Length: 166
Image (cartoon, rainbow, N blue to C red; front, top):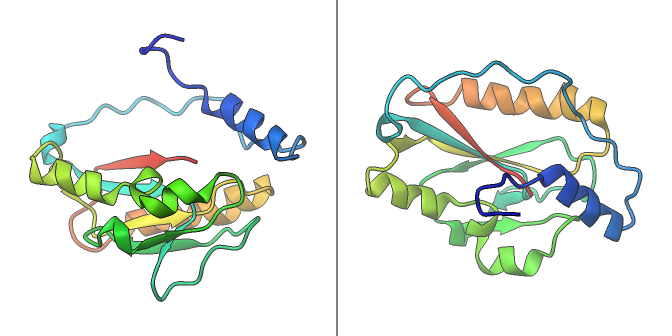
């Protein structure tokens, strides 16, 4: 694989889940690609929302359950990543607990705002648990919650969503 080849996250995740004993994981895959939607303004003017599936939460919030937790946690985007906690069943938590930016990069995104690389961050970032074993629940419960939270974000409308999978 060269540095310009895309990473096949589905294949990598299949291999990781197989090592964990989850050989029968069924993916929610769409048969058609979504239509390409070009960005209408420079990235330096965009309001960006973070959606990350690494099981991040913050003080006062309930940690995610190990499997099939289709809830979300809204975390203020201005909150430093050092205040973020993580729980997840499908990856080694130690590195992410040492530096939550690995799975929930709010500090890095705030640096990009300060450098004027991106315009702004949405008021809140959205955290969820990846690895939902019920395809139906992921499509009917989790996806609509994420969409609703992004669509109803206080402040400026969200122009772009950065998805950080685990």
